[in-house]
Length: 122
Image (cartoon, rainbow, N blue to C red):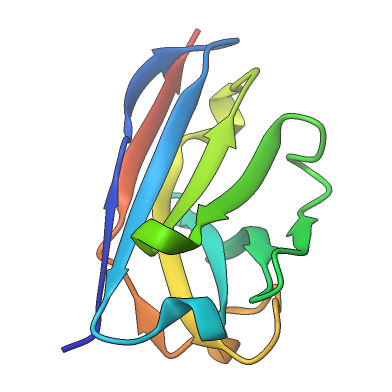
């Protein structure tokens, strides 16, 4: 059974940092692109960052310079390092996998985690 399990979310003050993790199982995640998406109440799900099976990363403009995506192939784990967090970063963050390319659109990913909540206060 394919499973993506996120962790690392929580509450943090503006300017702080969090590191999200996503452990993939049930398929060879190293052969596919993975990504992070987020969704705040009343808003559409939006891409945060994606990484190809080759390790090439793409980061959304609104988090560029603050967030970075990486992965540990040996542990089938995806990471999202979030620095200089802002209130607008508050959202449920979802791990996605199984895409052929590191797309920034949710429809391209067949596998999804249940999400981890990130709340940024000021």
